Image (cartoon, rainbow over all chains, first blue to last red; front, side, top):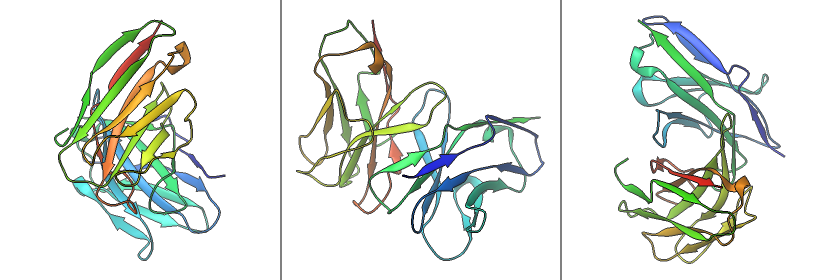
Length: 113
Length: 113
């Protein structure tokens, strides 16, 4: 069985500071990892994915994520947070690049001016 | 979200009633998905359709049926609604079946009394 843990329900950062949203996973074999963002009353938006290759993946809106196989983690990062980054963030894992993925419970990011 | 349209946006049903949630996309994507999102939880996959003419069960298919009517449309049917199916339902698409969903509709908020 595959699973995802987002250990923090809430992350608060000041605008201009770096942000990290944590994700750890469990899956047999090589993982496919994804980050999504959800704004209030909207559907999810895809941010980035890790399939293979470089451990540092760059995505939309200046976000990046670092894959760490030994720690089974895929943390989302941004060097300088914006107030507009405030949203709900979901990590997801899959055994393949398609079909059945498992989502974490989400982390609410609040960026204060 | 441009490209994936869900109808209706809101619906209230009584236990035992039936209803069909509609999803249409204009991006010529091959794969379509139905998810449910419950408070404090990530998305759970109900059914997906890798391509026109095919459907597969996801993580929580019980109590639901789907129809991939054509390449554009993927409907989700509740034959006999139960209070446990109160949720927000999201339709999503991907260009090819080997991709995770990248485009989501804005959701249908369904309450079952």
